[in-house]
Amino acid sequence: MNEKKRLIKNTGIIAIGNLSTKLVSFFLLPLYTALLSTEEYGTFDYILSIATFCVPFVSVLMDESIFRFLIDCKTEKEKKKVISTSVAVVFVGMICFTIVGIPIMNFLKYNYTYYAVIYILLNVICGMLSALLRGIGRTDQFAVFNFLLGSSQIILNVFFIAIMHWGLVGMLLASIIAQLLIAIIFIFKIHIWKYISLKEIDSNLTKKMITYSLPLIPNKVSWTIINLSDRIILMNVVGSSATGLYAVSYKFPNLMDTVYGFFYQSWKESSARVLGDESQNDFYNSVYKYLKNFMFALVLGMTAFMPLVFHVLINKSYYNAIYYVPILLMATYFANISGFYGGVFTAYKDTKIMGTTTVAAAIINLAINLFLIKWIGIYAAALSTLIANLAVYIYRKRKVKRYIELNENWKSSGIAIIVAVIIFILFYSEKTSYIIVACCVSVVYALITNYEILRNIIIQIKSKQNSK
Image (cartoon, rainbow, N blue to C red; front, side, top):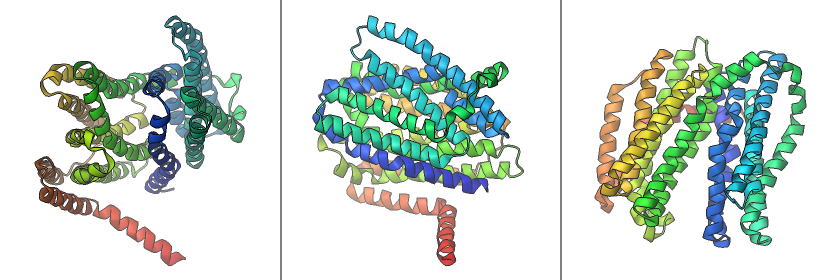
């Protein structure tokens, strides 16, 4: 299959499989907050945070390794060796975590120890299953897996919380049962036991896979620290009100990040599959150009239309949150393009750069926050995120040259910067007439810069209609 078509197809499949459940979950948030106390919802969020932090250490991110190494497998025997080896590593990690985690949580007198441990272990198992599905080329099953996982969790949440009134315990059980149920279904569906054999566990392969995944742990944890440190510092220095405003302002960059996430999961596969191909250079540059144009147009469009959308979606008591949205959108843009470079590094199995850059970014983020928070408040959190993400972008852009020469159109970049400055000025003017002008400018910019993408989509639609 043409790799561009594969990339587009996989992105579409992943988007379809995830978008519906994410939207439903988003719109059910008022139900959860209405039926759960702030303490219950806070505890659930805390458990999710613990899981986000612990899972990379428990799994040693072998889900990333199994996905990348399976792409290179040519025979069923090679696949069996990769899967058996990675499962053995993860099994040891899960045993060690259970032995160490339960006593520590009990010592800390944590009330939901067993729920948290089971949730984390199932999170690891589901992560491995989804990575395995993608690694063996079953992107369609990967999308179904995530759709069933998300939809079953939503259904169980509504049942346990709204009907049974089990509160926090119901929400925890919904997550645990959904993961357990879907994991069992897919274990039998793909007959995973066919891929696992003690005889196929390879010590040399174990070293290679751990060497690949280990640097990704600080990478993943550092992004978590970047996302959480802003809120922690705001809460302790400025107050809970500022944290609330910042959380609302981050809703929109998170939406943009979700859209990019569908592409990124496909990109990691396509960037690896095209290695060594004659069209590799053209493919990388083509995707790079289209991605930058689309994502930057999205940033400018969301910024321009934000004053119109914000009034409709957000309560007026939170309106001050709008001022931080453009900064965070731009920060998300640099994080997303950095992710594109990361896809190149993972394709070449050079993951050390991933870890070092994000650790540095976390330190930069924390330092700027601590230095500026008392002077400019919430703006310090937004700017620290932007500067940290920009630093990762610049460093990875320089390092990626050792593998691929990505073409830059400096004329187009200059125009993009000018248009961005204009839209930002019009945005912060807060005048209705200026906002309308900004919206028009963003639409024209999006149409011009993404003309080739739009033309190709129209051609594809017409060709399908003619073939009927």
